[in-house]
Image (cartoon, rainbow, N blue to C red):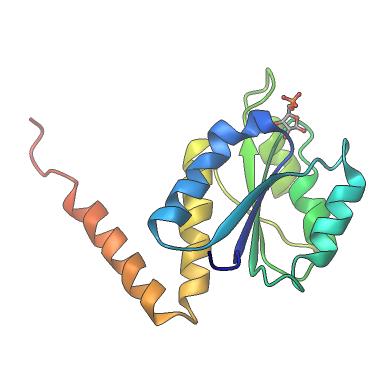
Length: 160
Ligand code: RP5
């Protein structure tokens, strides 16, 4: 098993049904990753240890998913220079708009690349991670190109 290049973290196990879509994309593209529950407010020390140690462990990108008052991506970004991609999860009556605004409205200086709410955001966080890593990995660039080509080929032109 290769060392993980992408760290997928989420505020709760309840986020996994959404965040697993990022994992599936990374698996399909052959990008080594890890997935862990790291809560900003329930396990703040775990978050501190994870974010401050991520770069030294060889991670290149962190994907952070959370719902509600979703401060996990921003807090993680505040403690690492690695790119952090945030995925808002629909976990409350506000259906993810709360998490989207929490994640996207980072004050200037600590960026979080914010994706769409839910499954599309998790999928795109996986693809975007692969795109970033492909800048310095020719084999991955080829796998990503094949993935995109297969997606294009899967779209029929006729309506039935
Ligand atoms: C957030 O609260 C988590 O990211 C999750 O989306 C939400 C609900 O968590 P649980 O109460 O299901 O553990 O921190």
